[in-house]
Image (tube, rainbow, N blue to C red; front, side, top):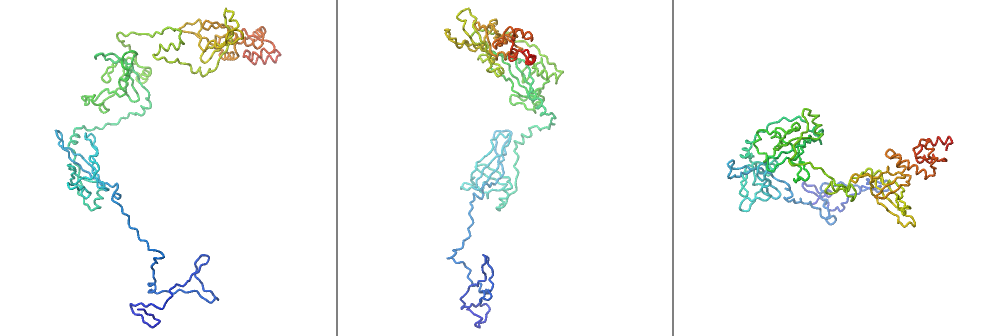
Length: 593
């Protein structure tokens, strides 16, 4: 029923009246836009109309206004998305329950034990309800330990059921594959998980001790506390590194079958007090080349009485079983030393060892003793056969010194300093044959290796082809012996001297200017006759008369054989190094030259 107060109907409690004659339900516009902003519209004065005024709706009218969104215009409203499904293998990934326990293993045919208690750890993987059994490693147990059962679903009974985490609890027995395990306790994460799922855990238990391990513990001696030593090993390493005492000894092994007395070298390393013994092999002794008789180690001198009955061949001695090791004061020259059950007679040492004992242990005498040589041993001296003329003397000598010949050593410093430095001389043959009168040669001396090469210059219409007369080689002097030859050098090449080269005699007639320069730089090792002959020859080549040059040389106290000439002779000789420049300048100011 609808009612309206304008028609005289009274309002009854609980009834609502709606005017059925009303057809306009719009809301009047009260806003206007200016510069993009919404503003309330003001009445315009003088125009004749006013803005629409809004009418306040009653509570009943507000409820009757439809508030549903049209489906054709805006579509159906979006529904809330259901929660995602998360599988169990994702929720329980890497979540493992850990239980601790043990099992007893019966031991047969042993008088010391009847059973053993072997502790185990159970890992239960929640993602797939699988389990694995792991046995912790016990030192010196003698039992292969580790993973006893790989990860799998353990059968619970014969009906095909498997163990679930709901079946596990503390202080219970777990029978798997015929073995009865006892679960004693678990970790904190497992306890929190089981209690959160409503499982009440029993009181935890302790794993019982293994009777055999307890029996072995009683047999082992108690470890006594040892006071740490105040010896500074770092200082010993810094001060004694690479310092070794070396002794020469004889190993007396004659008491055994086919035994012999062998020479050895005992090396004592001061950095760590270790000892090494090496055999000194003689050539052609017929013994196998095993140089190390005792590897480097600390040799015990005295063993504790409680450890002496123990056979040392079974296990090496440790520092706890040795009372004292060998020290440098135990190595005395002239006495027999027992090392590792073998007797060694010390008869000598090297210079460093002798100096070490004189500085650190002056009370210990270090004097070598004479030892008896082996019976039938004779001293043999190496005899080098005489030179047979094949090849050079140095190369032939290597065949006698080594089984596999090695190249002779060279003076590398001389090769580097005097490389490509040569002395050249002009020479002619000193022969009775008239056909050799016109033959001219160039003799080249190589300073880097003291070799000589001879080149013959070609002469037209002589009938002799020029070229290489002698390749590079060392030429011995005719007065030297074959086994100890003396070779020609720059001191022997004086102008006018005769050089004999393999039965050929050459007369030196000239030299180049570098020869004079080199001989003057080595004047302390070059004879004066050789140097003066080169100077005189080069002065003649530059046009200095011999008579006047000899007069001026005597006036200036020049060496015998030096000649000067007027008109620039002193200047020429100053360029050659025969006269100092100061004398030439003084004589020039006086008008002498």
